[in-house]
Structure formats: structure tokens, C-alpha cells
Image (spheres, rainbow, N blue to C red):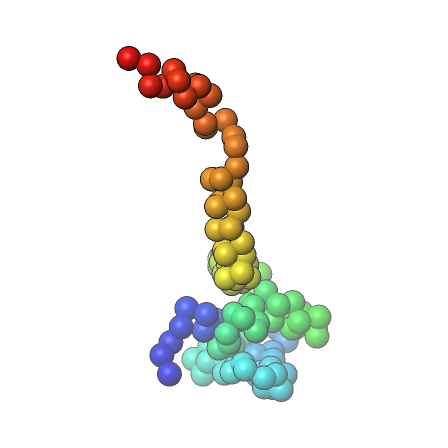
Length: 132
């Protein structure tokens, strides 16, 4: 299967205390459909999640984990990184909401507008247009 821009691989970085947050979060996320989670062996406080943006967002996953009592790393770098990812995923999901019927209805509106009398018409009488 080819990778798609909608398939995301993200890191969720937890605070060092309490220990074992990443592995507990992995166990919790394993119960969800269409998501894979693994703890990095070299960074035990980092959880790598794979999901499709149509089903999940990083912001939604982080919010759900925080509601379950997990503590995310809140360094300035992590906050900026998360904010950028949240924004990009939100825009991507909003763009996915644009569907073909909306585009077709805009085309119909454009045709009706072209045939409608509006200010772009020449008000000069026909006999004056042919005047020589």
C-alpha cells in the first residue's frame, strides 16, 4: 500500500515523571481501531503513533491522554511543535470536508450569473451601435 499524505506518524513526548507513561499510553491506544502505537526503545518517554488524519488527530489523542491523567512534556520546543502539527491537521481535515457537490453547485451558480442581467452589459441602444 502506498503512503498517503493523510497517514501520519507522530511522536507524543511525555514528561519524565511519573515513569512508564509512554508504555501505559501505548496499552491504552492499542484498544482503538486504525491506530498503531510503539514506545521508542532509545527514548522511553516517547510514544510513536501512526494514524490516518480522517480518523484521528494528534490534538485529539493528546487531549484524550491528558483526560486519562497523562502528563505531556511542556517545553517550549514541544509546545511549538504540537501547535504547528495541530494547525496543519486541522486545515487538512477542513480541506477534506470540501466535496464534489459543493463544487458543482458553484459551477451552476456561475452559469446563472453569466445569463443574469447585471452591470457588465452595454446599455447602448442597438441603433447607435451600428451608427456610421
